[in-house]
Image 1 (cartoon, rainbow, N blue to C red):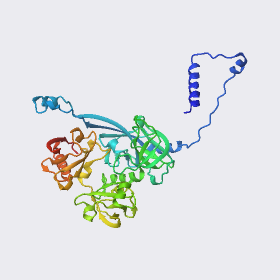
Image 2 (tube, rainbow, N blue to C red):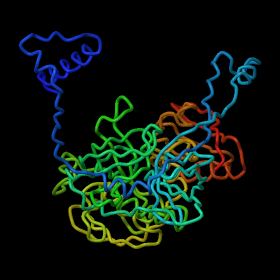
Image 3 (cartoon, helix red, strand yellow):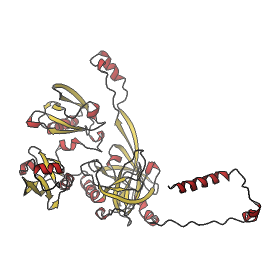
Image 4 (cartoon, rainbow, N blue to C red):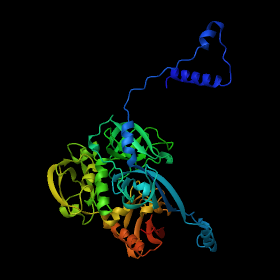
Amino acid sequence: MTRITKILAGGALALALGTTALTPFVPPATAQSAAQPATAVALPRPVGPDFADLAARVAPAVVRISITGHTEATPAQVPPELRGTPFERFFRQRQGPTERRVMGQGSGFIIDPAGYVVTNNHVVGQADSVKVELADGRQLPARVVGTDPKTDLALIKIEAGGDLPTVAFGNSDQLRVGEWVLAMGNPFGLGGTATAGIVSARGRQIGAGPYDDFIQTDASINPGNSGGPLFNSQGQVVGVNAAIFSPSGGNIGIGFAIPASLAQSVIGQLKEHGKVERGWLGVSMQAIDPALASALGLPGNKGALIGGLEADGPAARAGLQPGDVVTAVDGHAVAAPRDLAEAVGEQRPGATITLGLLRDGKPVEQRVTLAGIPDQQEAKGGPGQSQSSGNLGLALAPRDRGGQGAVVAEVQPDSVAATQGLQPGDVILRAGDRAVSAPRDVAEAVGAARRANKPAIALQIERDGGRAFVALPLKAG
């Protein structure tokens, strides 16, 4: 707002306040004109798109989602001076309940007349019960068909006793920066709301997971909009509203939506199988900066550098080597590790792909048959996954030089592992009743403990030459 605008706005406010309590002074020369009836002046409407018809057409398919669930309360740590004393048991008994009830709200949209509703995993992933409120006011219970934490998408199903209004996915790949879009949903629990803006950017990576490829928009997206649709001007769903960037928690014009091109594939698998099956290459990757490209003698910094291979993984069996640079998958260029992750993740286990490589500066082609993602890769977790999904908050890596144990590469903040004091660099030597020689052993031990309904698993940790056992609480899943 310019200074002149501020002055005018301030003057208008002062006049409005003044006329409610004061009688204006009218000079004699203007008394007659002042007595004449005032004539209303119609201000011209601002130039811009009119979304009224579009909103009316698609609104019946946009729903409000309410959930109830529970989460584990974080127990206070026993003071060191009480550990091993009779007072430790008394301290733990005073902790109170370990779970607390939670409630939440979000948005969704109907894609099938039979009642299939798309939303975010973070809306329903922790839910014990889900309820959907339709645009006509009906409230119906819903069941979760499937969720995919890696893309933050979920599919739920309601039974309405008849066909429901729907909306359809559009082609998000054709979106252009500056194009008008309409966001709809349930911000702050207020109910059906429409906001408009433009596509601010495409291909945004915000650290939400391995398949980050968000549409950024300045259409107002606020808490409660999660899972709602982002429409193009034709009324097609081009994105699923998922996140905002905001220091205050409210909208500041930076919102993010999962593109329809990704959502369609994921939702299709959830509808058919209840889960998403992705191909697995079995490599660790890193980006190539100019200094690294120079050191490796590469012609540029495009591609995904293979930093390591999972023992007996698909890439290792196919003959890939550390130091290889993947430049293409089935003829499609790979400019960065994300491109390789997306290309492999789009394939099903058992699919065979052709990798274009640079090895020692020479182009090579290598065919690789992908496998399914092993349990420990799913258990590693990543940004956006929650403890309730069964994730302990640990990312593990094999130990250098084939030593015993698995190295803790990352600990997610506020996770079970962080609460129990695990740190990057710790080495897990035993998990439950088995010795650990690779990350897979930890995942298998955790899975076995969960199947046995054990409340916790004991991990033997090595840190700075010392060893100790740590009990990590488990949640059945």
